[in-house]
Amino acid sequence: MGEPLTVYTGHWKAEKYLALGLLGLVPTALFVQHAAIDYALAAAMILHGHWGMKAIIDDYAHQGKKGRAATPFWTNLSIGVSAFTFATLCYFNYNDVGICGAVRLLWTIT
Amino acid sequence: MALLMRLATRQALLRHVRPSSILMKAAAPMATSPSEQAKAYWEKNKELGRPVAPHLTIYKIDWHTLLSGTHRLTGFIMYTGLAAIAAATLIVPASYPAWIAAIKTWPIAIPAIIYPAKVGAAFTVFYHLLNGIRHIAWDFGKGFAMKDINRSGYVAMGLALILAVFAATIVPSS
Image (tube, rainbow over all chains, first blue to last red):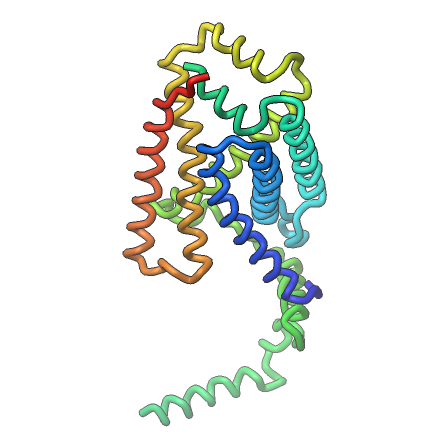
């Protein structure tokens, strides 16, 4: 409210381009293993997931009869979790087998 | 006939805007911009104590409700699952490959448990990906005919199940 509407359309477009990017990235990651794909996956998955969680929080964690805005607790928690998960995934890509390698190894369990 | 209708409608509308009308006292204050109107709308809702959406319980659950709900649920599972696994890699000792090697020796590491678990995990990814294509098509304004919505829904669900069952059979070499 009060913000220019272009803020929302710009964000909406960014969400769609990111979703399209992931649509190409995830199938690629199934066949090509590369450090660049690991880092791109970490960034794209977390941002896509973070915006998805924002939609869920806006829908279900608003303040009910007190107002439409999302409860600050859940909004802040989601920012914290997203930042933490992104940092941890980068650490994992650098120090361990990386995201693609992790899925591959997980799939060797029978 | 149209002229008669128009005259009758105008008469009805005029009755509402008469300042003395008791309705005017209950109406929201006039606002000039869309954002001010939205603000007045929400303030009025707050005053009246109206219930706020989403009304998950008042609609009939049908096929499309389940498809849409599954999309959100699979996304939620992947995000929270990824966050939990990321946290676990920091908390537990030893490297990821060491954990995979250890899990292979656990008594639950038998095909009857691992195979369905893999089907479930693969379905979560493939369904969200395939149904995501439907959402992108809708965002471009395509595929809104009821026939297309039904057909693309069956394809996304069916293909996700087939791919999941197939992907769970693949075992990487290393």
